[in-house]
Length: 154
Picture 1 (cartoon, rainbow, N blue to C red):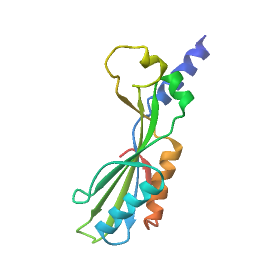
Picture 2 (picture 1 turned 30 degrees about the vertical axis):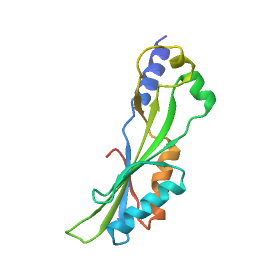
Picture 3 (picture 1 turned 90 degrees about the vertical axis):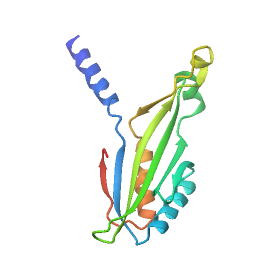
């Protein structure tokens, strides 16, 4: 019994690791060039651009990662979300590119929610997927960032 409680505690703590993960590095010079590269990479990796603004220096893309069977049984669609930020550092003159990987579960679908007349349940942030973290690193490398750092919460 005591061992079962310990295992459940570890599983519960692992499920709580929902913080986004950030990767970053110095990109080739030019804020607009880095921004356009980030947008292009998100599109090439099949992310749908949700929001973005060159003047603000960010773009956010979303890609569904769950299958139909999983959605029907869990009532949730899982989406990887990548948010790329570009900024020039006036002290060094370098252009920086940062990509934050996160993941959400949209609970407004499936058999369970289809039988429920309640209002929409919304999204819950969950731990970033391995594929989302790999996509964040790939975006940076494909945009010319040589020394990618990070892998921690922003």
